[in-house]
Image 1 (spheres, rainbow, N blue to C red):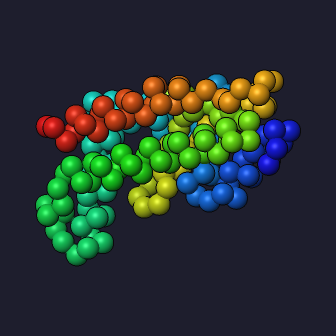
Image 2 (image 1 turned 45 degrees about the vertical axis):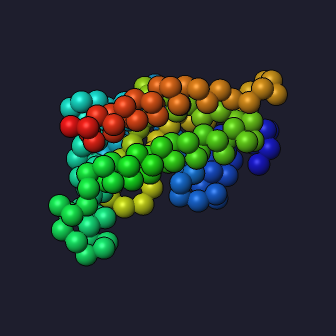
Image 3 (image 1 turned 135 degrees about the horizontal axis):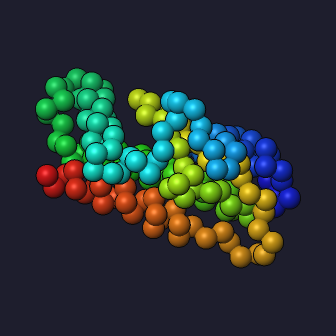
Amino acid sequence: MTRTGSRQEILDYLTALGPFFTVDAHPHRTRPRAPWRPFAQLPQADGPLAARVEAVRAALARRIGLPAAEIEPRVAASVTHLGLAARLIAPCVAAAATGHTLDMGPGELWWQDTPGGPVPLSIPVPLPPAATDDPPDLACLLEEVIAPLTVAISTLITV
């Protein structure tokens, strides 16, 4: 994949790297249809993050044959956080390695709450390659998406 790849080629490239890199795309400033949910709602106090952590806790317990109560909530929260953070960072970094930028800001990022495997993500159609040789800025993803997710997870395990 080179900097001159088309928008579809960028999506195909990410898909070829594996499920943690795959993203769906929707037109800019549109809301994908259900079951897509705004990612910005996930870390909110009344958002679905606590339920997601409990689902991970139950899945971990089933996998090792224990009751869910035997899995410490902080373990399930940690696994949830790691999975979501890796899922968000992987496609962004892979695109950046080829000079492309993905809009992974909280207002444009959508997800599906599906059990098991990488969380499905939808982003606006990828932007054309940057006009400069400067690497794309990943600070938005870290500061506006990963940081609130981290704070919300830490709140869940200290309650």
